[in-house]
Length: 126
Image (cartoon, rainbow, N blue to C red; front, top):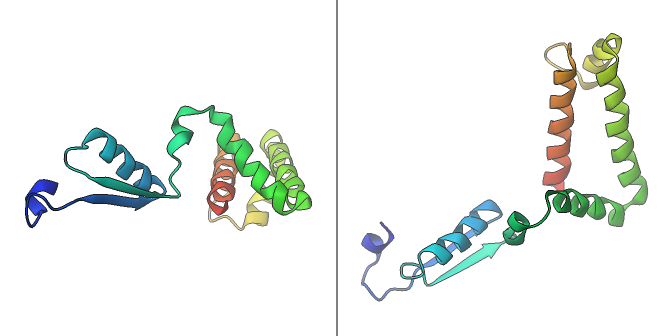
């Protein structure tokens, strides 16, 4: 498809993208060097695919610690605090009120979903 879009056969093709798209552009260049002459991968986690899965979470935590140790401690405490809600079903209504949820929290799975959503949010902010 890329070759069909070229105005002339010698025209250089540069793939580009940011974040995940940047990773895809770099991989496209590696896989099809005869089609793509270069790739610009802006803020792409190229090496994260091959490192320990905990490295990403450690890196994220370090960013918050470098900005504010108090902030990092509060984030850690918030996860600890929410885990307590997970273990005590009589607190689900309180959790629903705190977060003004559209539906009532009623199981540990609901709390796990909230924890996952918060983790994703903190990661994206970094």
